Amino acid sequence: MPAGKYKSRSLRRIFVRTPGSRVTVHYRARKPKKAHCAQCGVQLAGVPRGGPAAISKLPKTQKRPERPYGGVLCSGCTKRLLQLRARGVQ
Image (cartoon, rainbow, N blue to C red; front, side, top):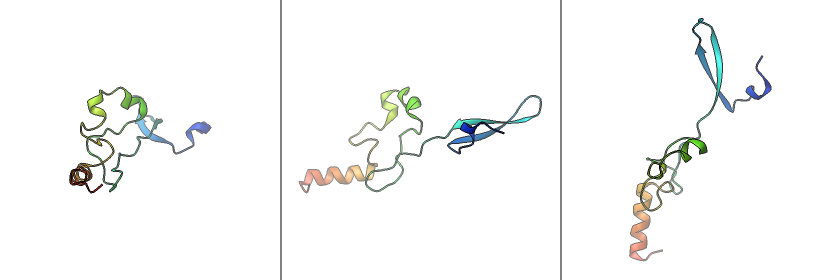
């Protein structure tokens, strides 16, 4: 019977075959969801999918795209927003 902290499904279960050919269960944290665009909701490209500890170890250039609104808006929404700003609509 697993301990109480392992009964929750917040940890994913990984079945590992040991050298003695027994199958044991390892519990690991789940990965967070992929980042999504704040306007249209499409998945963002170039944004890593790790926990806060894993992302803090990455270099700055790998944490999000190097452009205005990188990591917040997708490229299409960024393009539209910059065009509207240049035209003076907003």
